[in-house]
Image 1 (cartoon, protein in one colour):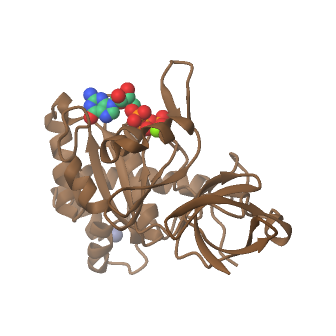
Image 2 (cartoon, protein in one colour):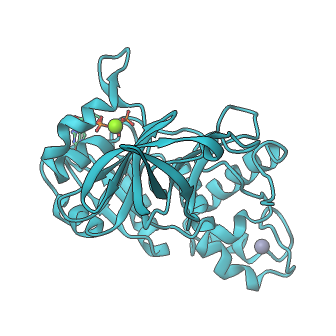
Image 3 (cartoon, helix red, strand yellow):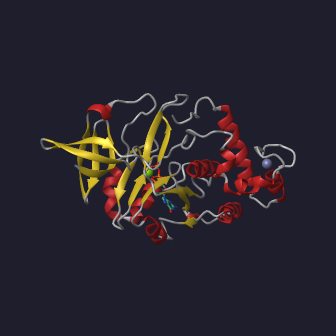
Length: 309
Ligand SMILES: Nc1nc2c(ncn2[C@@H]2O[C@H](COP(=O)(O)OP(=O)(O)OP(=O)(O)O)[C@@H](O)[C@H]2O)c(=O)[nH]1
Ligand SMILES: [Mg+2]
Ligand SMILES: [Zn+2]
């Protein structure tokens, strides 16, 4: 009985990594059944127990997941589509200029990964375009809260060594909007991967490569890196609007100063968070994003949120 790491796959055939070798393992029987809530029984990052049947490997069991990243399978449907599991950390990739730095997206993922207790670092790519004052303000804001921000340029080879360092011996996942440079960073880390990256991407109507399928790539530094397609609704799964406040670290640490213990920091009297946002002691853009995400979660509370059984 072998333990293997799932790299990628679809339907019934998955490529797994075991003792440094890659081969195909099949999904059969019990595991194949799509459960009521889960769309894919197996995802990249899963550790599976393999059994040999003739000259085939069959996945007999998925080992318990330490964490998972998932999304709703379809808009408005309470079915979960797994993207990856057992991630050591998320590398939240953004860019400047094109696509523009989108703090709303960043803050949604940061809250989500905080909920899932997945350590997260921010990568701001394409800094060869230069940084505007606004972008510097955002980056400083994240650093002030305590997030690591790595400013990179694939084009000018800036700080690729830092990304190499943080991914060493770890399972990392790139998450970020389409076009920010996730696949380019992966290629920069490990040029031998370029052919593989193109296998799982296709040309969009605009004539550019875009990643279609999540896939875990073995890196030469001993780590594994998950390249994901740009995901819009990422992170909106399973979040309770009343718990959101716990997943903004700077809001959480101020909340003990609020007049009401159950303060949601919206418009309650004596709210320390609101006061701090007005005074600029916490970044105002973060607080504004908190309010926006809160509203979205509240509006979708019957769709996205479910209590774990
Ligand atoms: N100027 C500049 N362009 C970059 C940089 N990194 C990537 N690009 C370009 O940005 C475009 C998108 O890069 P990709 O690596 O395909 O982006 P992605 O995040 O993988 O996109 P999806 O697969 O669609 O999610 C490509 O044309 C890259 O050449 C950079 O550091 N500077
Ligand atoms: Mg890509
Ligand atoms: Zn409050």
